[in-house]
Structures are given as structure tokens and as C-alpha cells.
Image 1 (cartoon, rainbow over the protein chains, first blue to last red):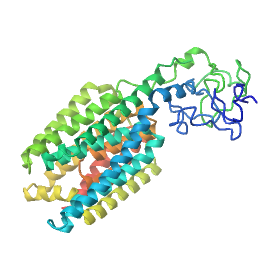
Image 2 (image 1 turned 90 degrees about the vertical axis):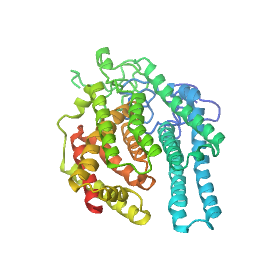
Image 3 (image 1 turned 120 degrees about the vertical axis):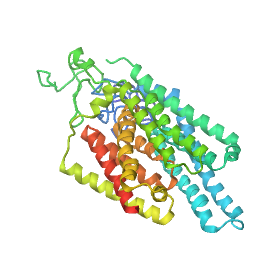
Image 4 (image 1 turned 45 degrees about the horizontal axis):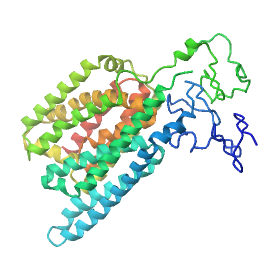
Length: 198
Length: 251
């Protein structure tokens, strides 16, 4: 069986074309081939709307097959950041709750709820949201997560300078993962614009 | 676009039918990528890059944010005088941004495209933000309200407080976020995502955990206003109005 979009012979038992990513059954482009992230939001290069089965952007001529190569180069860093966002979000929830019970005897309860429990649980919820969003837009979510993390550290630093060394190894790994994700996103954009216009 | 003949029904290079996405200009064949118009038209595709890159936008973000950090780290309860220095720094930074990127900034001060529907959406957005802010402050305390009681405690008159809280941030923050940062983000993200990322950064930079949610909402309203009106004037007015309302509610 051949792809009815580009004529490439389809792999055995498969309806998804390996060249243009068109799924013969659904008539849609498979996300995994044409870049796992931004297919639905339009052309990754010029953000114009895309026809569902197009291989090239009708507005700027960008070859969407290029996205598969870009995904091989930068996809792993972007997906790793997503896992880290979830891990750190869960840690906020765990530590916030744990510290609340540790200090419950010594400090007034409503003070602890306002300064410890609610901020940490809010951060947990925000990170869950970022984790969900990162599936569609890993680069954007990584930028926001990195900015949020730096600000949280700075606020903690201003409140209690000794807090910076708590979990320092984890912090370094998290920052490294997010920085590499942001760099990967910038590199992906650079590669998209480097492809010559046809 | 003023290409003389109507676009062909089929690609001249590969003969496949051209089914354009609704409302889009078809310059290239979606199947084989052949240019359908002369090369000049293909080259005329606007490059979203501009002069202001993503990196530059984040540099401005950090610069706007650093003095706050230093202030918080050094002083427990800053005097109003310190805050005035801080304002002066903000204005100077705004001026540097304006001078360095005068092309982008001047372009943002054009005549706005306004509509009644847009006005309604902005009013709804600001109302929702205020309501959310009120609920959060009453529920959790510790957001905008202490800033205002702080000004009161130091005996600053209402007019100066309004100048400090409403007028100056409306000008500086709008130039920083809605012009420079958003312009840089638009280079890296689709327009909607750029507005949302800019709104998140705008909220995060305020460093008040309680305000994160409603400031993100305000950032989205202002960012969309900037994008759809094509001008920063309406954003400044909206921002000043919102901040004034906050001051007047908690004064």
C-alpha cells in the first residue's frame, strides 16, 4: 500500500507514512513524525494555519518533515524537563505538608497554613499545570518553570539565607534540566529558521 | 496580496489539488513545497524575528526583576524614599529600553485598533481580575493590601500613592512587558503562547505568591489587548485603571 499523499510505500501493517506522516486511516498527520509538539498550533516556523495533511507550510514553504529531525536532536531534553517539572511539583507538596506537621506544635497553625501549606500546595498545583502544558509546549512551559523556580529561590533566600543549601543537589539538577530544555527550544527555533525558504 | 492571477486549483509542479486552510494565503504547494508565486512573493514572507530576540527579552525581564531582589535581600522594611529610588531606576531602565529599541517601542505607540467587543472583553477581564484579587486577599491576606497600608503608615498622601502604584508601573511595566518582552517572545512562540508566557513572567516578577493567579489573568488581558489593538496605549490605560482601583478599594 502506498501513501495517498506522497506516494511512499507504507511499512507492513502500518497506515502511517514514514515520509510525510499522513495516517491513511484518519487522514491526519501523525504527531510523532511531524514533531511531537506543535502540530495543532500551526506551522512551527511562521505559526500560520496548516492544512491537516500538508507536508509543506502553504505560507512559508517550511518542510514539516524537518520537524522529525529537529525532534531527534532536541526532543529528549524537552521531554526530560517535563518529568522534572512533575517531580519538583510533587516535592513541593510533600515537603510543604511534612514541614507543616513538623512545626505544628511550635508555631501557630494559621501562620503555618498561610506561609507554608498554601504556598507549597499552590506551587504543586501550578507545576501540575505546567507539566500538563509541557506536553503541548515543552519550551514555553520550561521557560515559565525556570523563571518561577528562580523567583521562589530568591524569595526563600530573602526570608532565610540558609535555606539555599537545602536540597542543593536536587536544585542543581532541576536548573540544569530546565536550562538545557530552554536551550533546546531556542536551538529548535534556530534550526527551523535556518532551513532555506523554498 | 495582489498577485495578478487567481491562485491555480492544482499545483503546477506536482498537479495535486490545492486545498487551502480557510483564510490562508497559499504561497507554497502543501504536498511538494513548490513556490506557487514568483520567488519575490516567497521572499516577501514576513520574518517574525525582528531585532528583539528571545534572549534580549529575558535580559530585560531579569533587569526589571534584579533591583527588587536586591531591595528585598538588603532591607527588611524599605523606606518610601528607597521605593522612590527604585521607581527612578525603573524609569531609567525604561528609558534605556526605549532608546535601545526605539524602533520597536515607537511602533508600539501607534494608533490603536479598538472595538466595542474588545472594550467589553477588557472590562470583563479587569473585573474578573479584581474579583479574584479581592477573594484571594480576603481569603489569604498578604498581597496588594499590605503595600497600601504600608504607604498609609508612612503618611504618603493618596495622590503620591496613586503616582507610585498606578501611574509609574503602568508606563514602565507596559514598555518592559507588553513591548519588549512580548515582542521577543513572539519570535520564539506562536502568538497565543507568547502572550501566556509573557503573562506568567509578568506575574512571577511581582514575587507575591498570593497574586500569581490574578496577575497572570491580568497579564493575559493586557497581552491580548496589546496584540489585538496593535498599540500599547490601551494597555497603559487599563493597567493604570486596574492599579488605581486596587489602591482605592484598599485605601
